Length: 566
Ligand code: HEM
Ligand SMILES: [Cu+2]
Image (cartoon, rainbow, N blue to C red; front, side, top):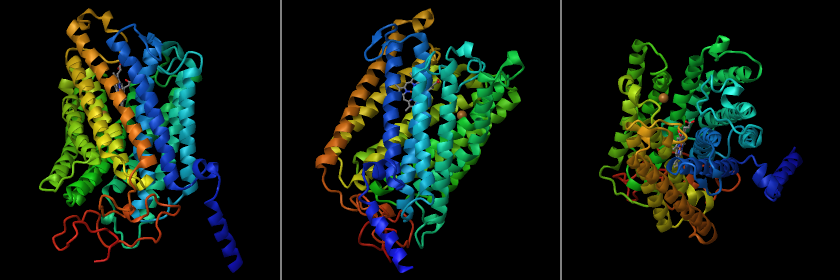
């Protein structure tokens, strides 16, 4: 018995000297899996961003030879738009916000050593990586990558002759299906770990909101993805076996796909929103040195949003021939869902109110998240009401609206999270001046990209159009000026991303040592060494209170870590 124990122990210590492959590529450590998801997600963001650059160049300067791409043909254009959208949602927002942050934060913030199922965790990343490679391979097959838009509406997507990408469309569906499997596997870990592995003393209401939000997001994903998986299989059959589930010429109904797609698609917005808005919550309390206002209400709000998000999907179908009485129902449910989200914004403002605020880089990102997302939310009201949506539908107004929600989620939320947890992840501080240059160099151009697009949408510019010169009403000089403004702003924004990578590099080489708790925060990840080793904590923590005890009146220190006895 005793010798066996010694032997396993011995194995354990040897584990630490494993080679690069075992340590970084084949690891089951949740922190390494975080980095794998993060690096893959950022690489995919560069690809998705490059696509946006190529088609925005085409939109502003039609027919131009685009540097690094060449002439964007109409077929290229469709494939670029389609894969830009798909990549940004499924291969950037989901892996970075849920998988990477979920992996890093859940075990550390609840005070345990790893996920409940580390091998499933590793498998989930490997399937995700495979799905990304499958997707990218679609660019190299005959006919090229899928070009039927990220919503893949049939009949365009169901018949090879219509989409002109016979192999690309099936490969795209397979890639998306694999990606869903990866996220189902990942979600199992997030939910079970948060429920079962909490440190002694940590009650459900002592769990930081970001952990709660990732758990709720995983549940939402699980509950919504089923119909879409069924739909994806039916669409694959339509494409390859001659069935006609969605093709009216073969007796099917294309609107069925819209139901299956958006029953998943709308909750998906909240799946990615919740982690991002949770990151913002953590940062705001720390840098306002205040208790998160109405913690329990925030949680109930998130749950209410999740439930309501299953009742709004047909707001995407107001022009698909929906019965006007049903349109009213979906208008009401859609307007209702803006209530809990708006309430969350008020809660954050109440948290900031009277706080002693530090405007460092993570805090700037967290505040920008709220401000920019608010524009997305408010413009969504116009689209949620069926009467006005009939006018706005499929214009650039919609496009500007959802970029004002997705950009804060995927880009602002990610930079907020990375800059805040960087000292924990690497043991080094980032340079705050470089951070601020990067912040302003991203936020200002972002608004110059998308505000013009609101205007163009109101003026009738439709999405998914290759060349507006073909439409005399939309080829006016002032419209081209706005298109050029948006494209130039994108180029400026891309240029400023270099500052971020420089900051990463400088910090890793020469950054100031961070110490365990540079922000004087309460949550448990800051108790672990920076960066935490295999197994996270030197000694597993015990929890005595909730995560947001800042500026407590009875304390001299303005913070009160969760693991510090009274
Ligand atoms: C910051 C750089 C970005 C720019 C300049 C940009 C620009 C655009 C434009 C112009 C289109 C529409 C093209 C057309 O309909 O003809 C588009 C579509 C889309 N974008 Fe972005 N985008 C950016 C970032 C993002 C991010 C971060 C996300 C999500 C996380 C995203 C998600 C989408 C989606 C889902 C579509 C719809 C694709 C489709 O209709 O099939 N984009 N983008
Ligand atoms: Cu929706």
